[in-house]
Image (tube, rainbow, N blue to C red; front, side):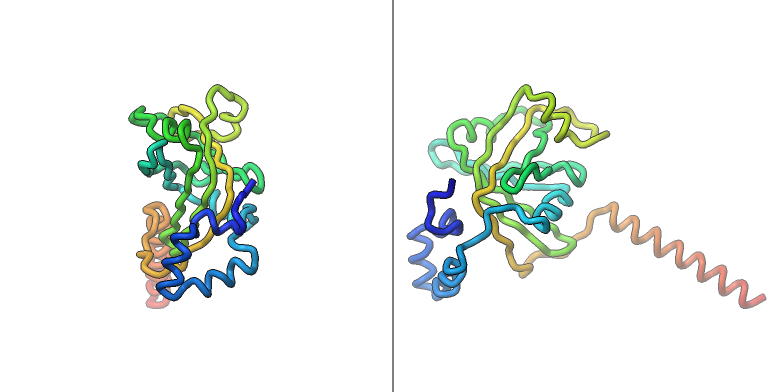
Length: 202
């Protein structure tokens, strides 16, 4: 349960609000608070965005407050929305440092950062996360079909608030597979046009 007056208070601490006031943005964010702050439930649009991603950054902090960011990736759909507050994904075996798991044992607060370079969109999600081990049924539900990776465990993320960023300063980049598909379509069109030109010359 959110103990803050507004969902956005998860990020807008009194110190942050004081800086906003000093730098002139507090009034605009106060209007957001008047409307209830940021959303907490995962909407259908957000769910579609989450499940289309092939990459995510997961931020945690240890008991001393030292932050850590870990990248996780997989095929589209490796991030799964389980209900209107829960995101789950398989944590694949990697370098086996287990920093994220250790941090979550000490401090369950976590943060997800998702960015879609092609559409210049980014989503920030605050919440709490936990590691689930030895749940074969849930693992089978979350493991991407046919993906060549060894599942280590599961991470379940409970959303407390989320917000979207403006596209300013996001460079537009495209996935290699999407570029290859676009080039193949272009080549097909060129081939058709060349055949049409040859036909008209006959």
